[in-house]
Length: 118
Image (tube, rainbow, N blue to C red; front, side):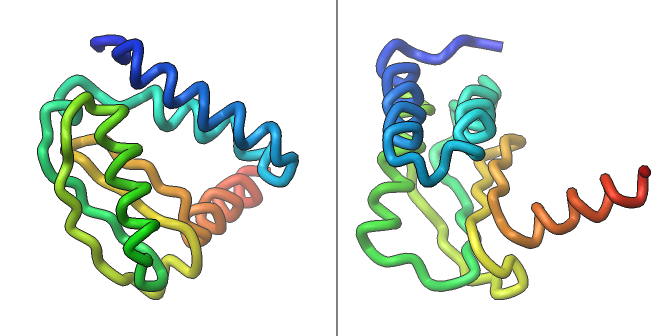
């Protein structure tokens, strides 16, 4: 897998630093960093991303997601946004075979699997 560009790596590190600085999201910081770093080379070639959210994203939120994906992929990405109320909260972003799912639905499913395994 191709490594991130210097700009993309700087962006990821900046996001992680900001999350750590706020102190509010320190438990998700490693996960966010990991998810951003795992974009496949195939996904980096994609020009469109599907963004699912529990509620309609504001224009500022859409721009922020677009900028994030542009930094990580190295080029502009057009967004197809959809409202999926069953996500409960958070977003699910897909570019090609790369998926970043920070939805509450996904978290609850993960917890259920972990609890069933015990």
